[in-house]
Amino acid sequence: MNKFWKKLKGGKFLAIVIGIIAFALIAGLVGGLLARSYLLNSFYNIPFFGEIDLSQGFNNQNLIIRDAKKIVVEQNAKVTEVASSAGSSIVGVFKKQSEAKSDSATAVFDISNYYLPNQLLGQGLVVTSDGWIITNLQFEATARPADYVIITKDKNVYPLDKIIKDKLTQLNFIHALAKDLPAKKFVVKDNIKNGQLVLAINWHNDSWLSSIISQRSKDSKLVKNSDVFSGAITLASQPAEEFKGAILFDLAGDVVGLIDSQGVIKSIREFEGAVISLLKYKEIKRPSLGINYLDFSSLVDVNGPSNDSLNSGIVIYRGSDGVAVVKGSPASLAGLKEGDIITAIAGIKLDKNNSLFDLIQQHIAGEKVSIEYWRAAEKKQLEVTLGELK
Image 1 (tube, helix red, strand yellow):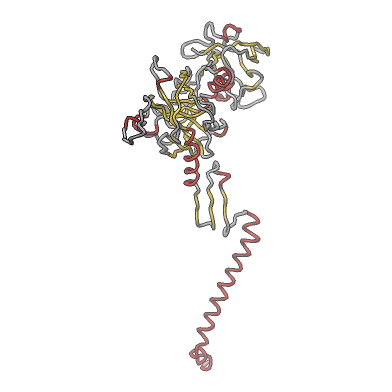
Image 2 (cartoon, rainbow, N blue to C red):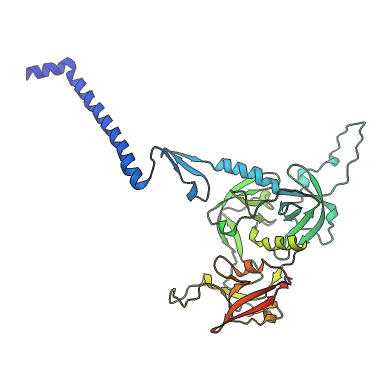
């Protein structure tokens, strides 16, 4: 026993303790590596010492987690990229100024020879490369296109030759005498999702990031009208004054909507029919059907889902005014009646992905479309000549 204590006093005890600790640390490290390689990665596929890429699950927001400790969000770079590229499709609308008189012999500054930022009347979005633009600017009835110009981000000035009021959205389409303007793609409707990040950009190149919380109109009614867009985009916060008239983009750079002068966000889906009409006929001929209806996709059968349940299509139904089919409307003239269940327009089925408004607005006034419907237990089909929205 005395010999043992003498050895400890000689310093061997400390060496033993250090050896035990070192062995424990090495064993722990080896065990962790084995667990990661053969257990955790195999069963859960979680690379705790590598990079976790969650970008595919977050609406393409490029969220990456590295080393399970450091979170890298590439959002700022994406926002900057979209603001730079998408902003080029936004133009400013100005009152046309008389051409400046220049004297080559002298170089005298005259502020009246310039368009100033505070003279901006409204903003617009380029929708076709040959000069068609949507704008929030409300023109007077007597306004002449020649009295206005648009100015691009790179300071090119183009005169206007047309101003057309869209009866559905109450916004204006203007045409500039320009070519090769940078038009942006409209977002696919299925790619507009609640929770999605969107970026508002104005002509001054200010940008504001928010997210979509709803796509339903605040005054949405159970009974809808075939000639009225029933959707609306609501963001997490109200746009500031400087973003009234701005354009809304997703983080892929596609156009989601426009913010009007009242701060109401209009979905780009409201404008698709007008753009189609402009491209074909150089004028807006919004179609009209003239019915009120209930959408089966928003209803739930009291008996639960079954093979006999109606889960798609619409039923012509009376609105708050007591009218189901507007007198003298295209639907009335074609013979549609209250209680008819419409299942398809021009061969395309009505369902949660294809609303009546969307399908009707793919056509123009005066065009004939086929309508498939049920009356009682009999399947029928007829042809309707669409009217023009008043």
